[in-house]
Length: 261
Image (cartoon, rainbow, N blue to C red):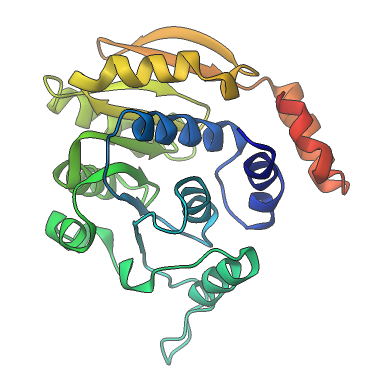
């Protein structure tokens, strides 16, 4: 990872309110770079934009030409006249970072009401689909179905908040999805916050990409099994997380990336 991208991940990205932390940002980077090197093409899609932390990460990794279909209600603080401060902040973050937003690829609405064609007709079959939408079981079932039918053969689905005790139905929904489609899909990587899934034909490619990624050397790697699939579990020790957060909060953000070297 070059110094400019490293600065973006560990400094610029942290200026945007959101939930993707450095370990998952580096997993995103490793997987997207693997796809590029292997010639595996397609757009990116995400459900749950919030203020754009993951959106701008995708853009920074892929470049201005990267097509990203971003889906969100954008209803935080919405007024009676339909104005959404959330959407305004999302656009402002793009201007501040100098990263263009393709507004024709933004879907302001409920992901559970969409069909795969709403995504693929805009951008094509998806190579990386991030799901961080509603956390009720019905939402996870709907969003996973949407992702599956939008996905390219080599596509990846990243489920957020799996195994988070605050959102138990997410874990149930992801497990149900993998059991229902056990012949086709398998998990290959887990972090504290996310579970990464792909079609079985590409499992070894992505598993090995995580295992061999130099940008992930700072994390403890453990091989485990989840629903009959070999999975790499990346562990970010609490001491490192606390030190990183302390540096961010005390104005030492410019040096915080050294924690992950």
